[in-house]
Length: 391
Image 1 (cartoon, rainbow, N blue to C red):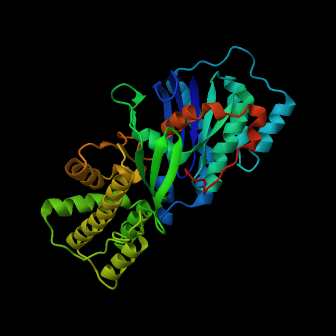
Image 2 (cartoon, helix red, strand yellow):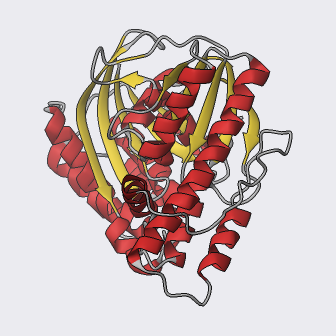
Image 3 (cartoon, rainbow, N blue to C red):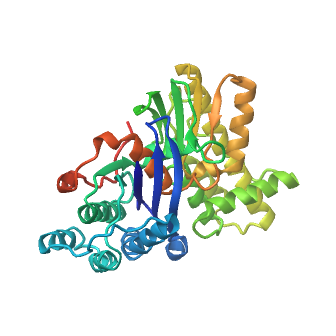
């Protein structure tokens, strides 16, 4: 099965062509083409992702990303003519009429290159920024009409789960995990614990009551004068502070650590940082020390809550996914603590390049959900849902 996958949930426009050989979850996946355009530099001056601007950039870059992925894959167009009837062109223009210039771009690409034979189009339908999601969803529907290809809507968070167990360096397969499994999903928009009883069977057992952990990293970065996206720089400074053994700058709380449930809260921690820096000019060493104090508090909460979930549900496997899973300190502490307290648990983190948003994970999730695909004429039922839940 050849899967064209599309991801536009936030500030990355990503398109991939992935060949799946075999049935899910035992298939082997070959990444034939993978294109990604990041908008980070564009949003930097706004201190975060500006939804209307993200939507505009997706519309401007998604056809070039499609072309790049196809060129990288070596996929040849079909031999027959690239002309389309007026009814199909009208439908394509209607689908893309809210995305300035996108219909013209796609139709020009079609007239120049014709159609391509893929078996499935997988597209992120949520969660995420709804204006951005709609660009990808409507684009997928339009390509489906032109190429006569079924479309499957994919949950972005399921993509993160599968990306974390995709062994791209060894056998290009999903790891053979044991159930029940806990997934800790940590990103700029999510902090949640998911219990998996089997493939595709999810139950949310814990979540943030306010800020997501990645959001908290970025907000703390702004408080100490670090521009968006500040989370990675906070982590880098925290590492320097540990290496140099800088003294503690502030005694920060570990919110909800003893709440008796599996929920999280990071707004109080962010507020504590605000009070710690209010009306003060911090030296570079003090900024680094505060970054470490903050990262230590976050890590303590994430690790302790995850271990509580493991103990409560008797799981065999832990999957950590989402953009914040790339945080080196969180990974080191989580793995070291599991080795000491739960040596029988197998823990998975995504391999490099698969922690942040990407379309490879959407191809994996699309293949898992291929049986639920819609024919091109029936794809109108697919909707973008910014609040779409995994469970």
